[in-house]
Length: 105
Image 1 (cartoon, rainbow, N blue to C red):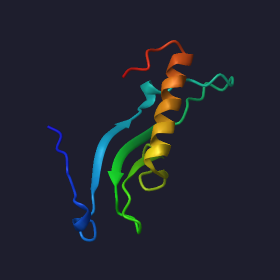
Image 2 (spheres, rainbow, N blue to C red; image 1 turned 90 degrees about the horizontal axis):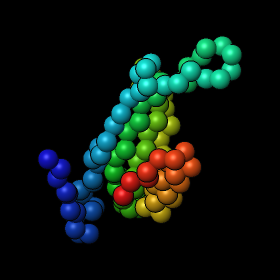
Image 3 (spheres, rainbow, N blue to C red; image 1 turned 135 degrees about the vertical axis):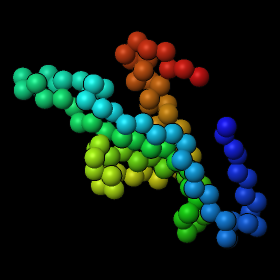
């Protein structure tokens, strides 16, 4: 069951929001063999989407972490403003349409 946490502006000084939204990890069977003649597979990755307002400006952001499976703590972390997150969402929808898939709601 999902729970929504509402933090009033007067609480922002002391109450920080950090919450994981979704996570997935790609195993060997989830990544394709690359077309480079070496039978090499694409890198197995794990990704996590979270929300946080633990910043000096206390503005909430969407946090996207992408890292190689087995190398936790060595990945890339994007701290996305709402506008940046919407742009990424739009790009993913357009990419799905480009490969003939339903982009969903």
